[in-house]
Image 1 (cartoon, one colour):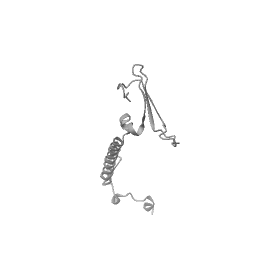
Image 2 (cartoon, rainbow, N blue to C red; image 1 turned 90 degrees about the vertical axis):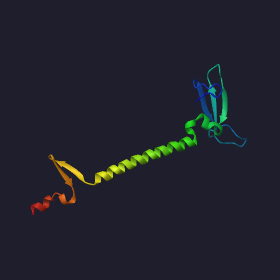
Image 3 (cartoon, rainbow, N blue to C red; image 1 turned 30 degrees about the horizontal axis):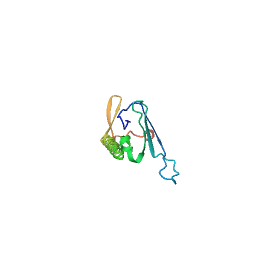
Image 4 (cartoon, one colour; image 1 turned 90 degrees about the horizontal axis):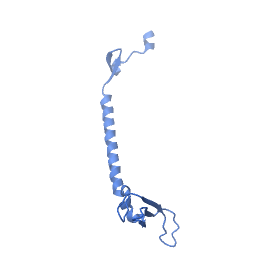
Length: 120
């Protein structure tokens, strides 16, 4: 966060709180931010309504940033899922099993006889 008066990013303290917007306001939800600059040369101290300044103070909280970030996350997830699906499909074609140094294709025609059938 940066001081609105001098632009410094050091020694900035802030807190959010509820500030009544009318005599009938009984809410306790935070709607204001108070910024204090602890530097004695500046000493800035001001309260702003969050709805008026949230995108300036907390750029990461802006709706546009959140939408762009969510789209990027969804695209990354979709790409990962596509790669996983492609790998699964490619792997389903012909499964190869290695046994005692011999490579055998796994297929229904190559099924191992049931030991019970051999005893009969």
